[in-house]
Length: 129
Image 1 (cartoon, rainbow, N blue to C red):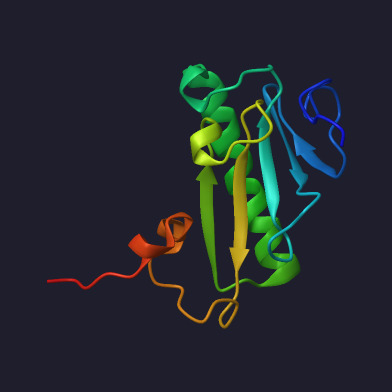
Image 2: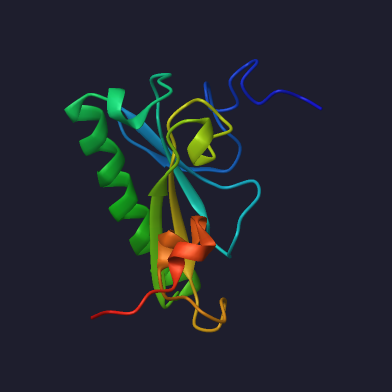
């Protein structure tokens, strides 16, 4: 099994690159959970989202917005999940920051309530009081 961190899979030019700005790129995920699943990746190698500069965060968010418009046109999803895994306990497996932009489609989950809370399935379904 190859280690995606040696060398870093996201340093250089990741496969599936769709656009870039001065500080970040976007690329389609190699293992998409839905059609159009994209990643926004800062160019500078950095493991934690919380260690990015304000400029890098802004550059990444700019690409999130641009990619969302393209995905709307190409796939017409019904919604989106946007998320970042920070640390091994949170499921991060490539230790170079990347933001997931996941198009969602009506019917792709029998119980979509909870959205990103689904990472802890027992906590995903709750009642509003």
